[in-house]
Amino acid sequence: MELYFLRHAIAAEPGSIAVRSDAERPLTEDGMKQMKKVAHGFGSMQIALDEIISSPYLRARQTAELLIDTLSLKHKIKFSDFLIPSASFKDFLKLASQYSYEQKILFVGHEPSLSSFVAALISSDRHAGLEFKKAGMCCVEVSELEFQPAARMKWFMTPQQLIALH
Image (tube, rainbow, N blue to C red; front, side, top):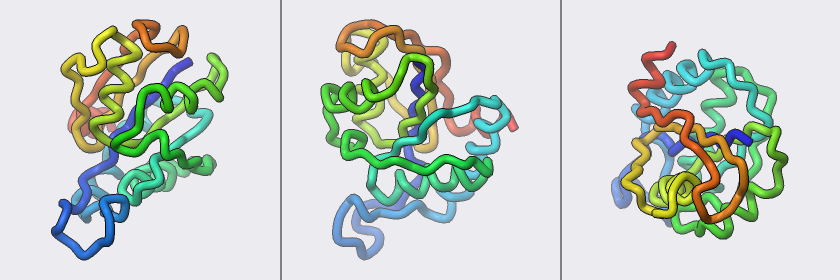
C-alpha cells in the first residue's frame, strides 16, 4: 500500500479574518497559487491515486479540491475527522485499514497529526523529527498497518521541491 500525505497549503492565520472556528480558516491567495504549482509538480510524477481523503476543515478541503481541479482528476473527495489536527494514530489506522494493500491513497490534513502518523508508521518514535511544510507531501510504502515500524519512507518533499518537478 502506498500512502501519500499532503499538508494543506498556506491558510489564513487564526484571528486574521472573521471566522467562527479554526475549522473554517480558508486558504490564502498565496496558498491557492502555491497549491496549484504543487499539484502540477505532483502530477508530473504520474501517480495513479485510488482515493483522496481529506480532513473536513476548509483549508484541507480546498487543498484537495485544487489538486483535483488542477490535475483534472475524476476523484470525489472523501472526508474524515480522523485527519483533523488533533486526530490520533489509532483513529488513522481505522481509516487506512479500510483500503487494500494494492491501493494508493492520498490523505490531506494538518500538523501535527500528519507528521505523527508518518513517524509512527516508519519508526517507533511518534515524533521522529518530521515536520510537513504547508503543501508538503510524502509517500510511505506500508507492509502492515500497526504501531511499529512497518513502513518505509519512499520520499518526503517540500512545496518548493514539488514545484521544481513541473
